[in-house]
Image 1 (spheres, helix red, strand yellow):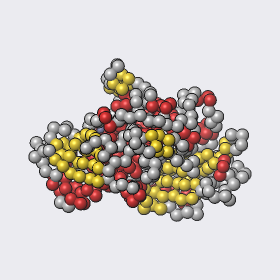
Image 2 (cartoon, helix red, strand yellow; image 1 turned 90 degrees about the vertical axis):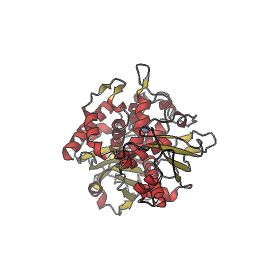
Image 3 (spheres, helix red, strand yellow; image 1 turned 120 degrees about the vertical axis):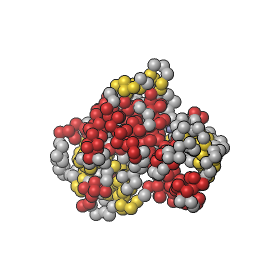
Length: 445
Ligand SMILES: [Zn+2]
C-alpha cells in the first residue's frame, strides 16, 4: 500500500503558542500523576470543590467513544475558571479491566493552533478545542459504570479534586445512539462524490455486486459511509477537519497493484483515486470479501487525507525514517482500527506477533517496536485513546507543530499530548502497559 509522495508535500504556517517542548522543568504543571498514585481509592473530599456540571454526554458505538461536555457557560458553576480536567474511571476496551485515567485537555497548544492547509489557496484552519471536553473510550457497559471527579487548579496553581461521582447519577441523559460519522455526513458542506472505474478485465459491477448487492447507488452510499467513518475518527467536528476536504473519490480496479494505493486524481485539489487490486487470477482473494475490502479501503482513505511530518527523529542506518514510515502506514490503520476496522482473520495473530517482538530493534529497519508500520503502530495509536479519547485526532496536528514536525516521532507526540495529564510517563511504560492489555485481550477472545 505504497503512498504517493506528492500527496504529502506542502508548506504549513502555524501559530505556536508554545516553544520549549522537551524542557519539562519549565512547565508549571502540577504533578497530577503523583497524586493519582497516592490516592488510588478515590481522593479526599475538599470543601468548595463540587464536581463539574455535565452539559451533555453522548456515546458512539462505532468508535466506542463517550463524549462528555462540561458546562463551561454555566454561571452558577463558580469553579468553572479553575476547572482543568477530569479523572475518569471506566472499563478498558481491550482488556475489559477497570482503569483510571487523568484527562486534562492540552488546549494551551492544541486549542488555538492555526495551520494553513497544504494547498496554498486553502483557508487556514484553526483548532478550537475546549477544555470542557473529555472523550473516554469504553464499551456501553463502561458508560453506565463510568465514574469521574473534577480537577481544579486554584490561583496558586495548587490542584484540588472533587469527590468521585457516577455519570449515571448525574441529572443528564446519555444519548447512546449518537453516530459521529452520521453527524459528519449531515454537516459536511460538500459531500464526497464516489465513482467507480476499471482498467482491468474485472468490471466495476464486481464492486457494485459485493458492496451494493447489485445496486450502484447503494454501493456508492456505502463507500461514502466508510469515508465518513474515517472522517469521524480523525476530526473533532465537521469544522475542525484535520485534513484537506476533497470532493471526488474514484475507486479504480486495476491489475498488478498488489493490494491498494492512493493517488491524486485527476489532480491534487480536485480529488483522489484508490487503485484496488483486481485479483483476476485469484477469485477467492480476501480483497474481494467483506469486511476486509472495507478495511483496506478505509486505510487508503486515511492516506487520501493524511498530513505527514517533514522528517522523523530516528533514521535507521541512514535509509529508513522509522517515524515517518510508522506514522504514514500506522495512522491510517489507527483511524481504521478505532472504527473496529481490522482484517478480522488476522487480528489476533497481528496482536500476538506485535507484543512478542523485542522493544528495541524489533526488526532490521526499526529502532522501536511501536515504529513498525501498519497494524503494529496503528493498533498502539488507537489504544492510546485510553489516555485521551482524542489521541488519534490530535496526531495530525502534532505533525504540523513547529516543535515537533522537523523531527517528529510518535514518542514525542505522545509526551506532548499527555504532558499535562502524565508529565513523567514514558513511551516504554505505555508500551509495557499496552502489552499487558493485549495479553488480557488474547486470553478473553
Ligand atoms: Zn498504506
